[in-house]
Length: 168
Image (cartoon, rainbow, N blue to C red; front, side, top):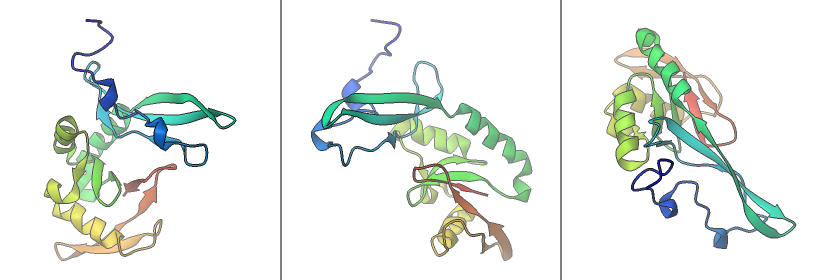
């Protein structure tokens, strides 16, 4: 067994695997893989996958891994100021990827399922309230929501060209 390939590695189940039978030049767009914990180096990664073509002929993919540990550590530092507010990143409807107070629950979810934690599964009523209020607003606009009989302000900002959103 090679030291470079972790035991149990299954290339056919790797999140960057591209089914070329479903690709053509018009629908092949770059995409980000699901966030995952690298079992060998114990770092959180996502991968940018770019399908490559020579004219109309598919020739392969270009991939580049990005470590998310630095981003995660910044969110962990926000815990000290949580009385002032929360910060988190989610994708889709409510999949939490990073959260200033739910790091251990999200880490556990990623290691068990390969996915983030849903706001509902998190049990964090404030986060659930924020996402409910956000669903009724225009993207990129500050909004208010009520939690524990207090009015709070929030802003949801898209991150890059994917479906990730930062909440402050």
